[in-house]
Length: 123
Image (cartoon, rainbow, N blue to C red; front, side):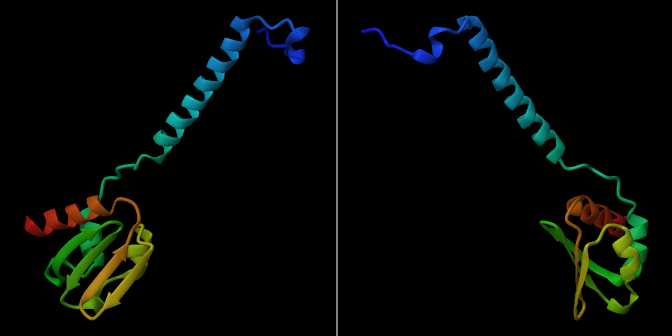
């Protein structure tokens, strides 16, 4: 049984050209996917832990530092010693203060910041 395809009757497209179009389309899609993945990679930024510690009231003011997702949770001895304006310049999106517990929302690089602060406190 022979199929009748009126759209292809008068065309001059050889099968190799059709294959070339399909392969080109697949390569374009693959390139776009790789580009999206590459652009979404987190950029690792070197953290100056002395700036963070100074703006959190100094080493003596920080009792503990933990990190969960995009947040850095701190237990401080005196919450009045923190400099919220300077913390925001360092990339903090918001500062949540609850008694002696302070939560910094930093979105990116939270893990590296928390590690740097902990390393500075342990040295």
